[in-house]
Image (tube, rainbow, N blue to C red):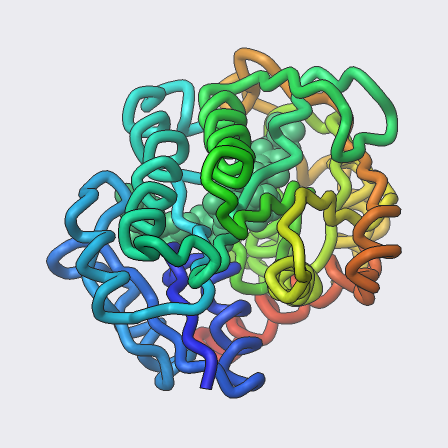
Length: 328
Ligand code: NDP
Ligand code: GDR
């Protein structure tokens, strides 16, 4: 039975990846931080087969202990402070967790593996946010990185450190440059879920409007369930490498609003959406669209869920959850 250790187990991707690996017969271990993590019960209920180990990406010895307990064949490093807007106000802790945390995990894996460096395969959750002020359209593995946020800068550090461990020590370390991926499990701070939650409440008559920031930014949005399959495929390759996972389609926040409101029968949302500078970013990533040719060809990976299906799935899920709790 293969064994996997996942950091970021309480997050959106941690839950989907756990489900995938359990369905493939893996023994799955998840790193959970804090003395009373509020998501502990969620993980227990959603993926009861996962063994939880306490640890924090900023605490090197906790990572070594987790590796010694889990004895993993594969490590998926998904843990991060992942909200881009938050990273300007908390740049140092973002750097410690999202950047230096990667080095802590790589070094812990290297020491744990000892003389047999290929004993453990490592996945790093890199991000399209690293492309920032894009230098090429669409963005691929070789596109020059130009991050626009402390989060993006921290991810660039983790990305190059992963490559460096591969090149310096021969580690089977792969970096997935994943474009935005969403689901009904997406955190409510991210724009897709913020919209789906608000649209459900507006349809139920529980609120009148939603306030957003930049409506013109464009993102390449896919479904998280499709993307964790790509992570797993990267670690099944004989050789480690970097791969872009994306849908190769881009849509603006306005198009997101069009589909989300349409799902509840509202065709004109202009009087329901406001804008506030507090949701604007000091430096915006205006356009992201990925080129996943390499992932198609080498991994045989293609996303299945379209943008339209994704947004409708998220709105329907929030409408149903609201109806179950409020009866509206
Ligand atoms: P989430 O924000 O949903 O989850 C982040 C996870 O990181 C949580 O489990 C959180 O745990 C954990 N974490 C935070 N701080 C620490 C720490 N100090 N030590 C250990 N764990 C910590 O992110 P997603 O699931 O959406 O994303 C997974 C990864 O993929 C992240 O690294 C993200 O940056 C990256 N990524 C995500 C994309 C997306 O569109 N979703 C696209 C590209 C990359 P806790 O419950 O304790 O807060
Ligand atoms: P992003 O996702 O920054 O791309 O990072 P987010 O959903 O936060 O923003 C996407 C775009 O929407 C615009 N926007 C708003 N965003 C939020 N959160 N709230 C608003 O009110 C709002 N109004 C407009 C933003 O300006 C932006 O252009 C996500 C995270 O999952 C990262 O961890 C990951 O690395 C990248 O995706 C790829």
